[in-house]
Amino acid sequence: MAEKLVIVSDMWGTKNGLWITSYLGYLQQYFDITFYDSQQLANIDLPVQTEQNIHDAFVNGGIDTAVAHLLKKETSPCYFLAFSTGGTIVWNAAKKGLPVKSLYAISPTRIRLQDEKPLVSLNLIYGERDTNRPDDIWANKLDVEMDIVPNYGHTLYTDEKIIRKVCLSLLNEVTSINIPEKIEKKKAV
Image 1 (spheres, helix red, strand yellow):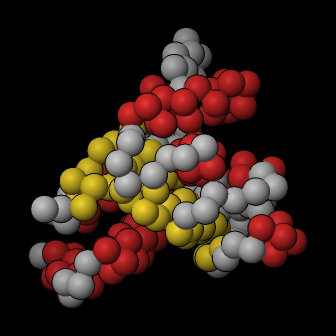
Image 2 (cartoon, rainbow, N blue to C red; image 1 turned 45 degrees about the vertical axis):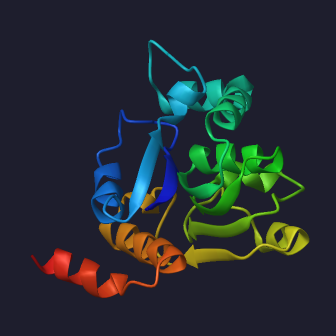
């Protein structure tokens, strides 16, 4: 039986999320996938969807609402792949007892405001040019490693090279199948 993978979107949810289909294409044959739109988890329904409006809605209670909903929905240990705000949601939920086998969080910049990490396996990935990513002082204080990818900004998770890298890493963590060869063959087709 396939391992369960929960994917949590960035703040845009499915509205700007065509890139998510690339992750699903790589991962769906190996995982039982559950996908959450962060805005739906947070009960955010804004008539005007600007970056600032969405950001404010998450900061002003949306993240806490999403954490509470995620804790109710996911009660068995599984793997998590989360993007930006989604990574912050899973990080905070894990600190409150969400059963996480591992968290792959790409660009969860708001965790830089945290002074405690969840006690789960973490893979934090950031673009070098993301001006809001946590700094090395924060990483050392919390004893976390960050994978900083050169020449990328905040939305590196939408780039096909990064998508492939993350999927390979996640798949290699949970399976002994020679995944890189299978993905490389799929890419060549």
